[in-house]
Amino acid sequence: MGAGPGSTSVQSQAMQEPLAPTADLPLLEVLPRDLSAYRAGNTGIPYVHRFESGRPGPHVLVNALTHGNELCGMVAATHLLDEGVRPAAGTLTVSFANVGAYESFDRAKPFDSRQLVHNLNRVWSPEWLEGTEDSPELRRARELRPVVAAADHILDLHSTSQPVQPFWVYRSFERNAAAALAIGRPSVHLVMPGGLGSGTPVIQHGRHGEAGGSGVALVAECGQHFLQATADLAVEVTLDFLAHFGLIEREVKPREAQRRFELLQTVLIRTPEFRFVRPVLGFEEFGEGELIATDGPAEIRSPCERCTIFMPARAAIVGREAVYLTRPL
Image (cartoon, rainbow, N blue to C red; front, side):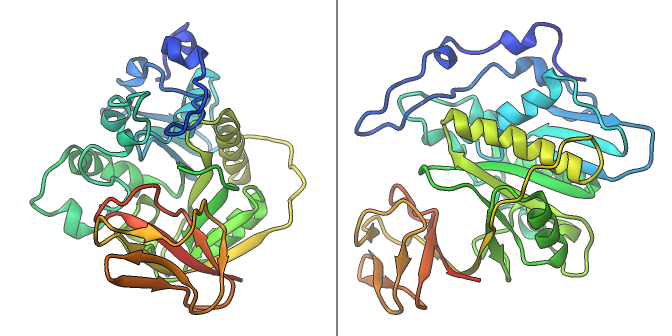
């Protein structure tokens, strides 16, 4: 079930006192709130809530906190539960994924609670889920596996380290593109013909990652992690997603002009010396062959004209993604 009466006021004092940005810290308009009231859920799996309408319709999963410091998903998920949003048709499942990482949040180091050990959004392959390695994220992924597998359609809510325009991310299946285009916001699309290239995310798990599979699976990157506008957009996109699949009624908003980009390459950080050649936030363009970054002795160059970069890394952490290289479609 949802949280009990009065639970919407359970939040940290810091939540009410946004921190001003400094040279090292972003503006912290949204901070974590206490999620203990949501732990029990009603599925036997902690932090997973399911509501069945009793009428025919799809099963939609709204997944929050795949990364512990991406707070917009928490805001959207608690909104659904606190406001008593229930499906008029089909089934709605709301999950808080990496609560362990979320609870490690330190306002002095707000980017560090992304994960505890493994990236929860890269381990959704049989090799990881059925392997012998162990970590808080792998235990949680194994626990959530039936939740993800049961959903017809998945909305995985994320945010970005830099304040860039929000965007969708999805495998380049027609079913995904049709839904994202119909929903219409965010108006930017990052399309992955061959998948992410650095692991298996939630939206590529099982049938959702198969060309012949069924069901829509989208990531919504709603803006910078700690901005109120990002949290607000996550709520709106979530309600739009539910309305698109007929779970709730909602006024259709005018669709903005859409921009689509194809992922060409996911660059991983190989050495602590990784550096971009100039300051970047995301969406910068590079000409064919132009130097984008160096990684020790290696050079990362643009593979095409108008190569547009997505999600450049803030820090050189070996093994993590450095940047996504794309081209406009």
